[in-house]
Amino acid sequence: MMTHDMSPAPPRPAHPWIDRYLEHLIVAKGLSEHSIAAYSTDITAFLIFLNEHAGTLEAVSDETVLLYLMHLRARGLASRSLARHLSALRGFFAFAADEAWLPQSPAALIENPKLPRLLPDVLSREEVVRLLDAPDTTTPLGYRDRTMLELLYAAGLRVSELVGLNLADFDAQAGLLRVFGKGSKERVTPIHALAMEFLATYLSSVRGAFSPKDQHVFLNRSGRGLTRQAVWKGIKRYALAADVSTRISPHSLRHSFATHLLDGGADLRTVQMLLGHADISATEIYTHVQAGRLLAVHRAHHPRSRDQGKE
Image (cartoon, rainbow, N blue to C red; front, side):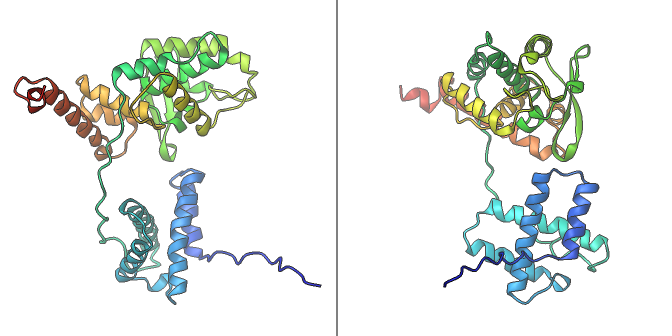
């Protein structure tokens, strides 16, 4: 009688250095489970590469790291994915050097692959208005969704930050939200009067209709906190109903918030603080969006523009 081999798949390679580093990311850095899993996957992939080439972490050199990046490139990985892998290795080997496991980091001096500068898709003011008006606010679900859209645009929230909001995070008197961003970093951000009005009414008169089971501000039909995926599906549905032609993403209202603030005269440093960016270079991308919009308007409306001359 033929038997099937039911033995489990061989375990992924492990190393005590990797375990210690992931523990450090959890305890000292406060990274999310999703981020920890991503770091673990990338560093373990490098360890698998070493094992296949009879190498060890203790003997890694900058040449080894370069060979690994060439290996990934040969497998078809784009520059952005290569940069992510290199970033994971940089952090890991910097920690190994700090712990004196290695004399120095073999990844410290390796330059990032050149990345294409991807500009975010930004909705026009008219598209934002249509999107915000799309939910039916006569129903509890519609009022909840309108309130969520208002907050995403009023405070430039990430979707993950929106679904993470708890009741204690809203200061109604001051008009402030306490937001926990990437790495559980806390920031306090203001919201305008209209968003405050929607949120206050939702909390006092609508949220109870969902039979709350926890302290999340925004609840699903079962009375528990929403997932990012559920909010994203709602955004896509409302964008379709509102006839939004701009390519939509989970962060479209966040990108629009930043760009519209800069268009209105806000300074870059303030926008950085409102977005919760640790590095201002992450915020500077919106100045490129702004410059592109100005160029398009100039070409469309200046009397000496070639575009005008074609008409």
